[in-house]
Amino acid sequence: MMIAENISLAPLTTLRVGGPARFFAEATSLRDVQEAVGFARSRDLPLFVLGGGSNLVVADSGWPGLVLKVAIAGIEQRAGNQNGKVLFDVGAGESWDRFVSQAVMAQCAGVECLSGIPGSVGGTPVQNVGAYGQEVSGTIESVQVFDLKDSQVRELCALACEFAYRSSIFNTNERGRFIILRVVYALTPGGEPHLEYADLRRHFEGRETRPNLLETREAVRHIRARKGMLITEGDPDSRSAGSFFKNPVLSPDQHEALQNRASAKGLILPSYPALEQQKKVSAAWLVEHSGFARGYSLGRVGISSKHALAIVNRGGATAADVIALKDQIQQRVEEIWGVRLEPEPVFVGRD
Ligand SMILES: Cc1cc2nc3c(=O)[nH]c(=O)nc-3n(C[C@H](O)[C@H](O)[C@H](O)COP(=O)(O)OP(=O)(O)OC[C@H]3O[C@@H](n4cnc5c(N)ncnc54)[C@H](O)[C@@H]3O)c2cc1C
Image (cartoon, rainbow, N blue to C red; front, top):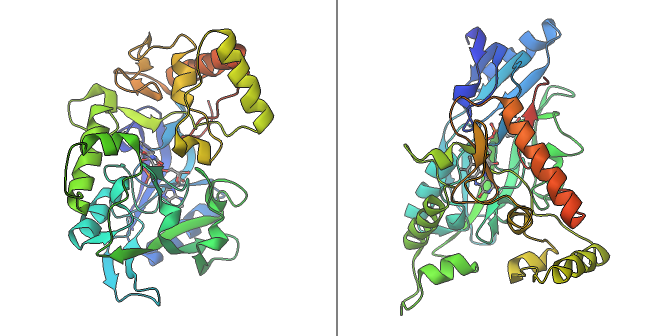
């Protein structure tokens, strides 16, 4: 395995900001992972594990240690477990959307609403990727990891991953401990598509037959493209890290206080069944009602013209530019609504 030096990280991310990695390696096997970890340990270098770079803000000073890109490939379809599911054992370096496409073509349900999400398979358990009413936690059977604590390979069951809204052990209490090597998804052969979200239902309005998995996948990709949430060549609104803020999860008291602030301004806090189930409020609504319209600009960065939650690089932006806009939004939303928005992307390195 080659270990390169001073590799620019911005082109390896969807937001395209940030400085270089002091050392950089790409692992296509467990052996490569072990070798890279050995290299980092022998030089006492901090290690950062990179997937598809779609959920990152890399610091302008870059990463002072080793960046290890996990590029383990392979999609293996296996006979079902006891519940009649089909198991897909997928290398962490596979493109997530390629796997979804393959699952849909095999008529297996469970991930069709997650079509078009950029990044790698190994990135999906980290923040329990979700969209249009599905989350990967709904289909993950197990995650194979390299444990940096004792250098062992382990198989973690879904329960051990402690999945919740945009979280798991991988981005909370065990952050930095595991390198994800493979993920096993249990999908439903011949299953119906999940059509819970209003956007999707609207897309199929007036149809008499139920859409199939492939039509659902295409609808999701179409809706995402309209919102700049599909990486599309030539669409400057897709030069982002996706939604920049999580939907805040509030206690009943906090929710009531927010509703009161809204009604004092003659506004009604939007409520959708999908948000209410998890006691979430729409971060996009809070941003838009704090004076940040879609298309807002702050120098070389701005808010997508198609989606209030995406911070986009309008060309030549730095991580400092992105952070300045993030701070401005957080501050204004907190002043007006008393809610602190939490960023969704991972901040890599320090400036
Ligand atoms: C246009 C756009 C739309 C998006 N839409 C959605 C959406 O609808 N829903 C959603 O949930 N997310 C969305 N995202 C965010 C992002 O695509 C997901 O979080 C994705 O799963 C990140 O995967 P990645 O491989 O790119 O990870 P990276 O961005 O490379 O890394 C993210 C984190 O995961 C860790 N990581 C990655 N791979 C591994 C590994 N093999 N082992 C251990 N740790 C690892 C990294 O260390 C880092 O902490 C969107 C992003 C963009 C740009």
